[in-house]
Image 1: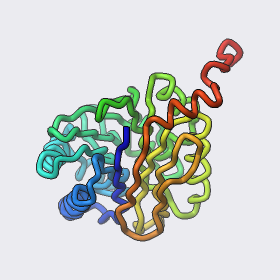
Image 2: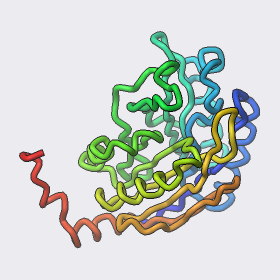
Image 3: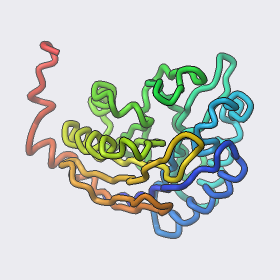
Image 4: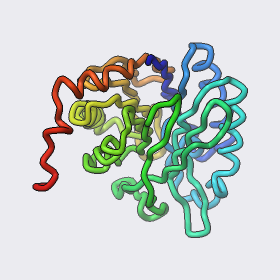
Length: 260
């Protein structure tokens, strides 16, 4: 089965949810016009890393962002892997991925499991405690957030649970953009799955972000790659390739988990 996917490699206005919502609708509309079945947004697209004000500008229980993305999904008849937003809960703020199907139904909330201390996330955010598994277009998928990709055991857990496509949403700095591509290709190769990774571009007061959003097949081949500028990165995946690759090199049959 073929699926066409559009990655909204956007710049994010620092701490300005309303301005970012306007930009996101333009990207979702463009993805729909390009014939994409799934549109993908970057990490923390409503606010960027405005962490010192995150309690003030976070979305209460993700209600506003959920309603906004649901309305866009219905309006443009498209599934949305809605990046992540700061979600304000009774316990604190989480960095939470929202997934919405084309009928406007929220099919997943996933809060980032691994907080990135180098960008002070642990001072302002709470870690999640659930997996990123969901289903779209009759396909088992998963969503992870940025730093999560440095933990291969967490990525592998989702593939062992049936995920054929793993989405990664990120604000990955340009200073380590070589790690971004290398890690994502490695995760695709070692897990024999599609990896769809949407990174932001632009800058905030402390960081420059590297773009280079990627669509990678189960052999680790890059099918589509973004630049360092704002753009919609579009690619088409053939889900039959997952089974073909897994049959060619049966790593899941050859695993020895009793030793590890």
